[in-house]
Length: 140
Image 1 (tube, helix red, strand yellow):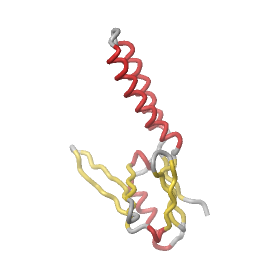
Image 2: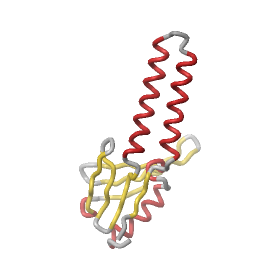
Image 3: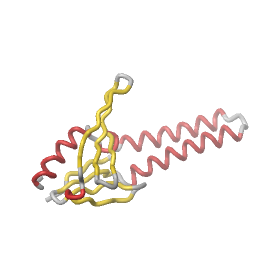
Image 4: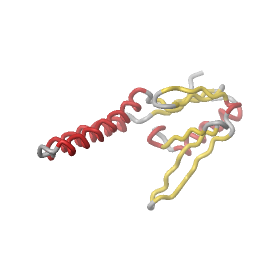
């Protein structure tokens, strides 16, 4: 059986790289010979590009099958967890400045793994609903 997978939408790393390029261009344009401005713009652009590279190197953030889940750990590594290792799967919902945000939380005892909608490409509540039957019955 194939695993269910959730990945970063392609538009997210593209947007990060576009903003990095625009920021670098603006920094070059408005540096006026000031090395500090140029270095600051280049540093922020590089940080955005590195952040986007994570999305390109490890686009699939979460995969689930009847045996457990595989998730991204660290910068672009993978970690496999059997369902027996997972203590809780829940969605944390918080209102913030008039906007409701959701985060999927996978609690594996010694580690907690958090995923936003930008990580999963789907609302965390939908992902949690899809994980429920797998965790309980081990069927897709």
